Amino acid sequence: MTRWQPDPSFYPSPRLAEKAPPETLAYVAMFDPDRQQPDGIAVVDLDPASPSYAQIVGSVAMPNTGDELHHFGWNACSSCLCPNMPHPHVERRYLVVPGLRSSRIHIIDTKPDPHSPAIVKVIEPEVIAERTGYTRPHTIHCGPDGIYVTALGSAEGAAPGGIFIMDHQTFEPLGRWEIDRGPQQLAYDGWWHLGYDTLVTSEWGTPDTFENGLVPEILLGSRYGRRLHFWDLLKRKHLQEIDFGEEHQLVFELRPAHDPTKAYGFVNCVISLKDLSSSIWTWYRDGNRWAVKKIITIPAEPASADDLPDMLKGFGAVPPLVTDIDLSMDDRFLYVSCWGTGDLQQYDVSDPLNPKLTGKVRIGGIVSRASHPRAKNGHLTGGPQMVEISRDGRRVYFTNSLYGSIDQQFYHRGFEGWMVKLNADPDGGISFDEDFFIEWPKGHRPHQIRLEGGDCSSDSYCYP
Image (tube, rainbow, N blue to C red):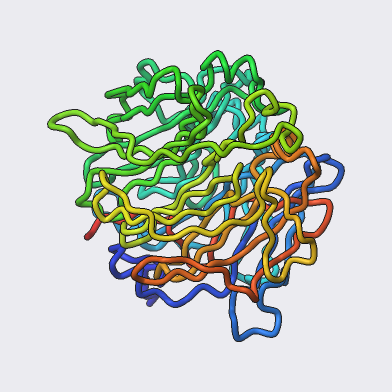
């Protein structure tokens, strides 16, 4: 008789997930910005006791060129243990890897040999467009009832973007998620409060407004995304829109509290048209509605026009460009990537409306070009971008590439990829692991990181 058991990497609560074994591998999306060779997923050794620690120890190449691998995720996670739509016997085995430029989705099996993952299925863009009405898949989240994929364009590449669902096991696109879209047109990230039957989405822009770089006229005209949308998760119906105002552009990464009893989360706004600052906002329940509050403002830094790319010369300052955030499993520390200035900041957000800065490191940056103890090149390009946290909160990893065409716009001196690791003190404070610095192989740039067994931006929980 077969005895079914849930995947051991699934945890019913974030409190139990914190006790998970340390990760020993990372899967990192890498892409060729010139679109001359296939993109791939690199396997990085994270085990400090290994002779190949902080090295790329395996990879898998995509079958085509020009995918621009960006955000990707697991086929299944701890949300499969939720009582409303349980799928406890699905394995966290496959990586669901979309190409943001190609609209192609790759299914990669990590189980036979985690060091040598293999492509087992490719879903072509025509299939996705025909079945869902969407293109440009961007973010993958494994939910209790399927795989949620946010997409930035319609089948024609225009608005509206939205969400479609894929089957956990066959990986077939099932169709568009929204029943009643309401006013929502632009898309970017999507995540949820499962205990409150609420889904939240954010905004970037349609593919024609970013695939060849940010368009200054659209940015200065406040026509990129600036809104949050709140949805009834079960009825798939739009409930509420919050407009951050014309000053704020590019409302990006959603990080809800991991504790399912807490109805709040954090989102970053990349740039203010008023003063080039970046900001962090908390969304929260206010009576029967959702509300937002700006809790952190990170100012631009004065800089000589000689050190700035053409896009910034007239401003005389380098903006922080907060392009990613991540929240530790205990909901205590929020990590903030300042891709423009080169800072990775740590805030204590135990009180989600009153954060306290507890740590900061600097590496790269448009002007500062700060180095790392193990870097051969003393002037690093790029800055902290995609950030990921171990489940116990003690280790923080990040890479430095944002998006191929946008890298060139802001890092005009050239661009070389790298990946680093920070050690995090349980009481606050961060420092570089001086033994961990990967100079990324030329021809590719690194983007999102997924940790073996799960991480702080992959799983959702239904029990506190």
